[in-house]
Length: 179
Image (cartoon, rainbow, N blue to C red; front, side, top):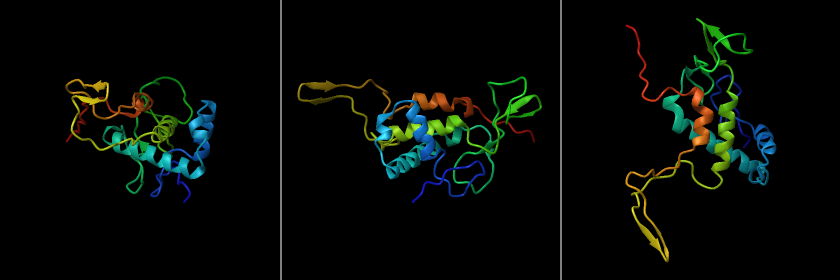
């Protein structure tokens, strides 16, 4: 089945934020041999997994709101303030009340790139694996491992967090609504 890529209109059946062709170009420029070795179906599956992870891990933290109620993915979004740009003209970015906003009819390049990066990571491990009891000590032959108290049980993708940071609410931010 062909991968359905979000085109900025809020498709009800979109499965990915980036196409295989765009992911191929992205990884070609970065010399990623693991991605190049995959066939089309494997690439599509990996991109679906990357997109799924983004929705599951970041959905409650996105700025702005979805553009329509039937779209399958979290992007495109409206009212996502662009904090890194305040003055002067910027193609495709709306200025309202002195603040700049990302276009509400596209998926930001950073979201597409994060999807691609997560797709590659999905090749070697589950992005959202089930969690069991935390191991505090384990010995296998001559190798022994002990984890610190409170050690993280899941993988944190700091490169993805950095790519998506401009689109996320600040930690602990609470929306205030005037009555």
